[in-house]
Image (cartoon, rainbow, N blue to C red; front, side, top):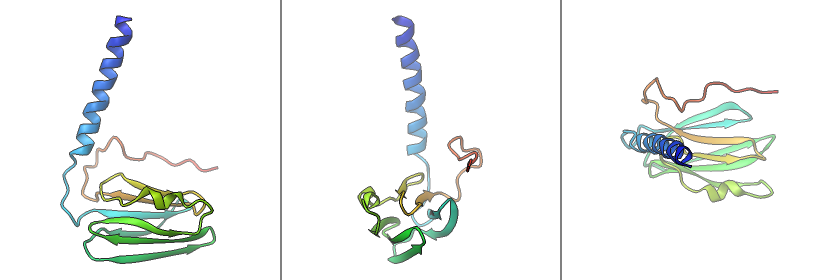
Length: 128
């Protein structure tokens, strides 16, 4: 029992340290970007600025509208049968995502000035 407790404490501590480091990533407002991908391919990269901008995405998979404002982005329209992506809300911090599975659309906030040695960075994508 003691061994299991020690292992759980160590694992929890490592996870807590990692979460703390990710939470305290330094960036200035206006330097973040949102990478929009459709079907695994980059569709567009937009800067997250204070000014309003609307991005209309119409593909063979569906129709979505994204709105950039207040240094963040949110999905305002989706023609998916269950528009769950609309409930994902406003995202404005690195590594936050909006996913619309039926439209094969992903929006991810990135910090283009992050360190190169990021352990949470995507290593590979395997497609069938």
